[in-house]
Image (cartoon, rainbow, N blue to C red; front, side):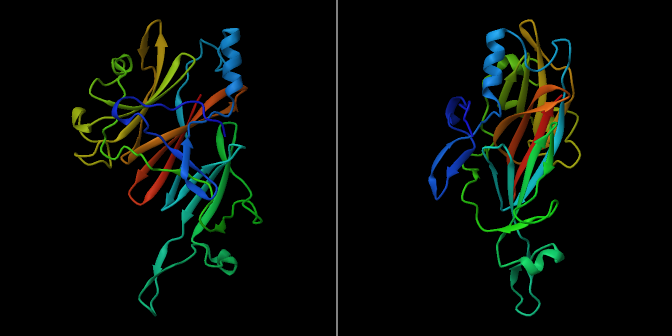
Length: 276
């Protein structure tokens, strides 16, 4: 995997997702990646956009949701997403203790006490598709120990403190928002931000009054100003931890895929979106 960018501003200049090396979790490196850096570099030389016709208006669509109880994520050098999810604990009626217990009855004979499920997904036409997991058959999980490589959630925005100073983007959206992250491509900017729902007509369904949900929207630049041509996505009420950017062929065009990582209680969660 190749780092392309991640440098946040202000007092949280190093706020990012981290990936640890095998057997050495004390040496992290930054984690915003692109599946095709050379593609973007070539487009700048030719002064053309790789994201399709300039007359075409893109929108963001959710294309994946991965929840990992006490779990881990990892992107390998083939841009496959590995998900490690902890097995649930069930009370043993004989000992009254909580013990690990596989959810899949058909896999119980193969279980040797490993604490995690391991799942692998790959991008195809902008959609996440489950791969064959280890020696098991497609659409089955395999058991695993603690992964040797994984994305670390060390610097999440637990106090809703991160706020990138991008007034040009706030003018097109909510001035009282706190911008957490921005990814610009072509004439577009995908903006991750938090907003107190009390500033609107009330909290969205499922949110509490004191929660600051995190949102995602796609702005489009017209001349020197940003505009909001599409809808806004409500993503999470968890702590924002960073992003990974990949590219995928969709409808004959290269499309960016944004994976946003959050801490939501005991879960590490990945929300994935594709611009199309």
